[in-house]
Image: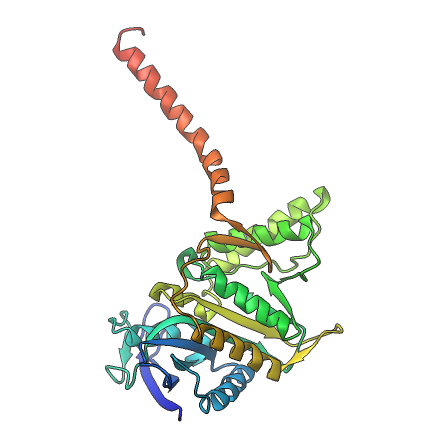
Length: 334
């Protein structure tokens, strides 16, 4: 079994964001399913700006091409520049959709296709030794991947010996407190409202009355800065195509007794790809709308949506009062 490798060349025409024409190139490889017809596929996407992510993807591809248990196509995508725009260009061509204005493809169609994507993983690695692996799960327009995929990434990270984090807040399975949960819950609301992962510079701020106003100032500052930035991670665009995706971000370790290396990241990816390969059906049983407050705890929509309803409900009371006064006026009481 070999890896089929192809290129997708495209050109970005001048626009209000880009003064000059620029060329780009996405590279993708496909390992065909051995045990079944290629109806479905699993995607592994890495940015071309991260040499460590490329190394992990190539190491896993070299291992996976000799295995005979794959029942779904494995697609490896090397995203030009690691931007959501480059990923969107490739996904649009893969699904046969028309490209957006300002984008010109050198080749009209992709040379090869795989099956329908049932799930995707992204890698964003910086360094060779790590302590924490952050699971990024935010997607465009507030969409979220199926929670089973998020839980899978968390469990595989722990199995590899690393500490999973969410919203840049680290919690182990046996360490949970209200203050940390409140910080993470607030970051989750920000991510949902602004359609992207938004983080505080110092998420471990203690929630006291003295630091409350400073904390709120930081939040609004993040609103101002992040609202005009590109979505991150680059897998955020996958939600537009109905693909459940999470990105594993590992940054260089600075201190601490726990550490894993690139070989452990390869094991995490292998476990995730094999888990998706063994799925009997698509994700549908778990939650699709939730807020993560801890790698092992979440708030479903059934709990926090009534609170929003209570906030909005008083707005209708003046309307009802105005309607009652109008009826009294019409009936001649005024």
